[in-house]
Image 1 (cartoon, rainbow, N blue to C red):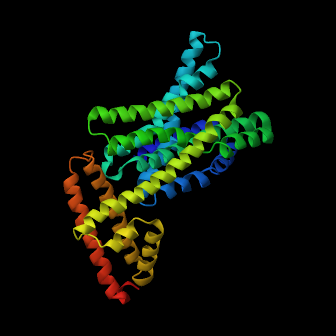
Image 2 (image 1 turned 90 degrees about the vertical axis):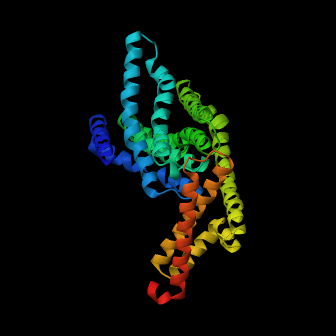
Image 3 (image 1 turned 45 degrees about the horizontal axis):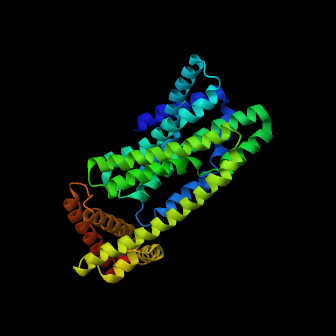
Length: 358
């Protein structure tokens, strides 16, 4: 995986150097990173109750920033060449609408699909799909913006750079993450709701189709000089609706954790105050602060693991009740229960001997 990322980065750096030059490409990379300061924290915020491992988030981002744009350059260029050879009157517009949406969404979505297939235990549902898709989309937008900003600067100078920065980085920083989120939702439903193979395929295909449609409408608006109209009529309401969806999903996830862990508490696996803590982001934060202050870093790590695995357990039980869980769900449930009990015992033992953790 590391070798693949290194090869893809070397190829992209070569493209940036040939197309823009080192200095311009480096400056545009710094400018393109500005939207990440808003996009990435939003996805990290929605992922608080059942946070994904950092290495998988990095995988999704780097896939989107390196592998997906490199593949898109090759495939979109090949399609554009075919249009030129076939005598299409406006090959640029045709490629933007017919080639870019399926190619780019397919390549970005492949990161989410790989995580679902290879790291199934770290893919619990819709929120996970949205987070992984958002990171892949953010990475893709970062690399794509380097080229767009660089071309605008080379052709129109500072005015072109400023206008392109406003249009792509300030007005539409969530465009690519939002499109790919449709794939993440589809795969999340396939993982957490669908009971049959055809059901899983149907959810995934529907998510991919929605991503392509939104991307195609977005590109079509630019080719028809209707960007601002489509932005106000489609993109802004869509983004507001997406934010509302994230809030609802996060709230629902907290309610799911509370409901499922309460059932375990009824059988003695948790205390009811623990369930209340685990279903609340502020309470989780306070618990980690307490563990750090009373026990030290060791205690904070144990509390974080206790919280993470309790969330995994709740979402696993949710899938089991829907009969959509993975085949080894019962074994996984027992593993989580044993790990949770071990972390609780570690916290209690360290709390009774605080000098050992300081």
